[in-house]
Each structure stands twice: as structure tokens, then as C-alpha cells.
Image (cartoon, rainbow, N blue to C red; front, side, top):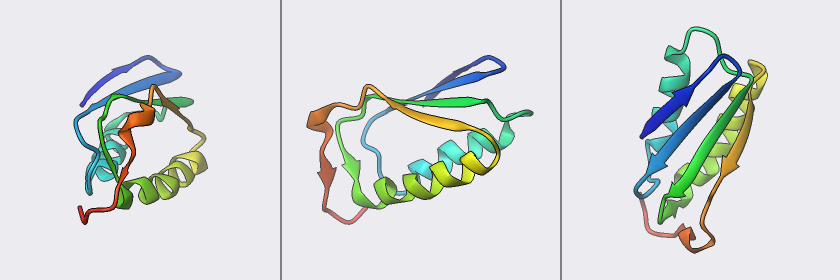
Length: 88
């Protein structure tokens, strides 16, 4: 995972399969930032698979960061990424 940031926008690039725990890592990074960005862009360009557990937890994540005033955009998610039904 890589991040690029300025005062208003933070881009978080995710690579590899998005399994259980991935959402918590993103939230952990956000919590270490001094001032939350106005906009968080989650770049899913290099994510081939999204497990159902973190997919569901993304809703909770978006609601949590939204309460602090941060909007979230999902970018470059590949249609072929699909959701895995396998346990994470």
C-alpha cells in the first residue's frame, strides 16, 4: 500500500487481494495523519480480488471517516476484481 497526500486530498493506493484486515490498515493510516483530509481516494487499480468481509466493512469505514468530515472516493476498481465468497 502506498499513499500520496496534500492538505485536502489523500490518495491511498492498494495493491494485491483485499482481504480481512485491509480496511483496518487503511483506517490506521488515516488515524496517524495529523489532520484528516477533506477527500480520501482509495485507488483499487491493482486489486484483483475483494473479499466479502472487507467489502462490507468498507461501508462502516466510509461512515466513520465521514463523521470526521472526510469524503471517500473509490477509484479504478476493476470490474474483473469481483467479490470472493471464500472465508478471509
